Amino acid sequence: MNKWMTGALGAVLAVTLLAGCGTTGKDQAAAKEEKKLKVVASFDAMAEFAKAVGKDKIDVVTLIPAGTEPHGFEPSTEVMKELTKADVFIYNGLGMEPWQEKATAAAKNDKLVKVEAAKDVDAIKNTDPEEVEEHGEFDPHTWLSPACAEKEINTIAAALTQADPDNKDYYMNNAKEYTAQLKQLQSDYAEKFKNVHRRDFVTGHAAFAYLCRDFDLMQKSVEDVFAEGEPSPKKLAELTEYCRENKITTIFAEEMVSPAVSRALANEVGAKVEIIDTMESNKDGATYMDRMKDNLEKIYASMM
Image (cartoon, rainbow, N blue to C red):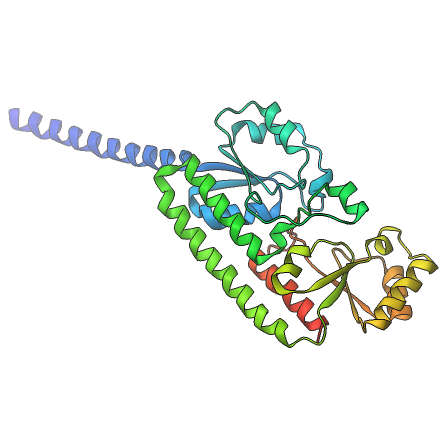
């Protein structure tokens, strides 16, 4: 009888221990999941940089929906909820997200680590009155430059480390790997741009000053041509003259312009409209690195 009771008690104890181990494992997995940093990024490029550094140690939410201009974005109730429960908020800065200061103040999240990704970038001053009116004193489009992206990655790594110091080495190593890719991309295209026939290109929006600085290029913006729908005869004449004088055969636009504008440019200027990605949103799931390489390759091809 005693042997039977001893065996039964042993069996019950074993089952209890096994059940306890199973529960502990689940609890540990849940705890590990809960320990992930909750990161909120203003727009797509910032989210991509965060994921490159944080990888599986963070969960990232992008605040600004695809197709929405970051500068003119108006935070919703859902945005405020995300900021309230976030550990880290990553925004580009330099006037790109003028709403962020009021939004983060209203969120009243004392634990929130705010990081201005572009804070260590040597900012370019806006000289065009329209750009000053839209963006302020400085050009905010820093993420479109591989060299500036390197600095932004390192700034983000420091912010994630501040919020989660136990994983400092993890974040720093990921940042090192990613910036090495950016350095290689810049090196590859610096070599390619040495052999181009000219160094200027025409774009529908003056968003590439930092990229131009990286590779000693020059952009000419024809934003007003695209903003007005079908170009006026005067604007078309000015663009036609510029393109002919400079032998421009490609005009870059952020999004596909109307068929009427494309036809007018093709017929009058003899130039095609090529899409260039500003990486403010991501509709096709391509990575930042792939899109940056695609941008550089298109610009390079237009100069040959």
